[in-house]
Structures are given as C-alpha cells and as structure tokens.
Image (cartoon, rainbow, N blue to C red; front, side, top):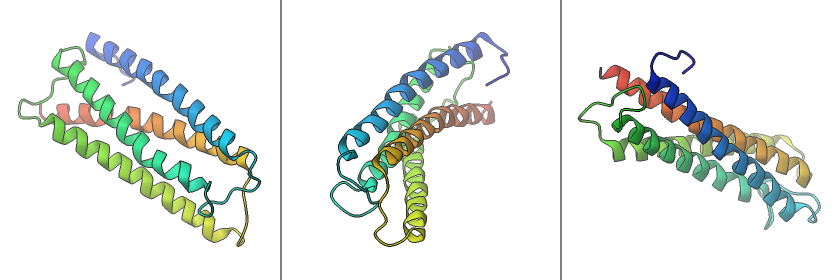
Length: 168
C-alpha cells in the first residue's frame, strides 16, 4: 500500500488510516483502563485462577476483537471495491459473506490460540502461586489490544488485494 498508483489507491490508503485510528484508540484505552479499574484493589492477579483472573479479560478479547475488526474491514473494503473507489476490482463469482466470515473466524481463532499458548507457557514457567501486578497486566492487555487491532485492520486489506490481483 505504500506505492500510490491510482486515485483508488489513495482513497483506500486514507480509508485504512482513518479506520485504523478509529479502531486503535478506543481499543487500547478500554482494554487498558477497564482491567486496571477492575483489578487494581485485588492484590496479586493470577493468569488462570480466581474470579478476576487475567484470562478472563485476555481470551475473549483475543477471539472477538480480531473477528469483529476483520469482518468490519472486509465489509467496508468490499463496499469500496464495488463502488469503484478501492483501486481494485473483485471477481464476479466472489462469495462475499463466506469469505468475510471465514477470514474473520480464522483471525479470531488464530489470535486466541496464539495468546492461549503464550499464557500457558508463562503459567508453566512461573512459580506456583505467583501473582502478577494489576497495572502491568493492564498495560500488557492494552498493548495486545493495539497489536491485534493493527493486524486485524491491515491483514484483511492485504488479502482482498491479493485476491483481486489473482483474478485479474
């Protein structure tokens, strides 16, 4: 997306930048502040133990955030393409809904599995009964939310452009 060839590319680049900003700011803020306010007075926070464990915040976010953002970006990018403003054209036999749900599901499931495996590695490598600081975990959660937002915004655009390039 760095090489600007057409007006459609410029429109798509501006669209992506705007959506990225609209997605990343609230996701980072909410996914940092809400866990911090919930966990700050509880003392040590555990990864998988207790009513307010870290997995309770991280794992649903790891599944739903990429799913929703990927689906929304695909939907809006496909609409831009149909209007002729995206700089690429999708094939006539393109199954929009199937592609959107499949890619959104794959992104959500992949991020869930990766973060779950990372949490299990941390859980297995820390001493039994070790608790984490709520502020640190909240910052980590915000950083993960920001990373997932960027990946879930840019990856669908790349895949749709590749799909349109293959069929031209």
